[in-house]
Amino acid sequence: MVGRARTHVSNLAHYLKTPLTVLASEAEAHPGPLSDAVIRQVDVMRRQVDHYLVRARAAGALDVLGNSTPVCPVLEDLSRVLQRIHERRGITVEVDCPPLLAFRGDRQDLEEIAGNLMDNACKWARAHVAVAARKAPDGRLEIVVDDDGPGMAPEDRPRVLERGERLDESVPGSGLGLSIVRDIAKLYGGGLELGESPSGGLRAILSLPAIG
Image (cartoon, rainbow, N blue to C red; front, side):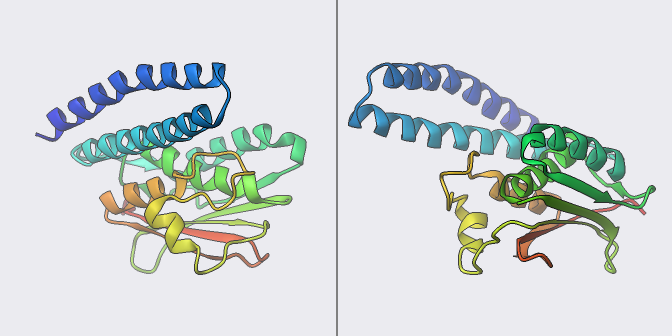
């Protein structure tokens, strides 16, 4: 049943993406208030398509027994990629991770959720992002991502997690990154919390099942 549901979601997403692209192209070719409204709504629909595709894939991955993903290689690969992407701004990404730490789940899901958190931190950081992975006292995997950016007001954090709201349109991104991370973490029995980093920016604490 899960497999069939994932197939239906994927098919629906595939059939929606082409018409959405056509709508966006037509709207961009005819500037004006109506086209602006169409472009905004197309962006919302695209984000929702991506959101449910990720959830469907993660739900299917939970059925695969014995999934084990080393954490350090994933975080280090993401760090290298993100530093290249944000090289012009001089953003550094530091990773602190015990070598034998492993995630009980699919590598692609770990890349998706850790990548979202780290990319979000890089976009807002002034100069530095710190990523620390560890085994929490309760035995779960914990990944903490800190940035030295402007941070986020406590009253705004639930809105971003629950509804994927974008609080600042000047920073590129879909706005659904953190809510997707939270949803995938919940599918694995984990969670995502937001707080304040030691440098005054945003701290994201991701909990997931660990091996061992």
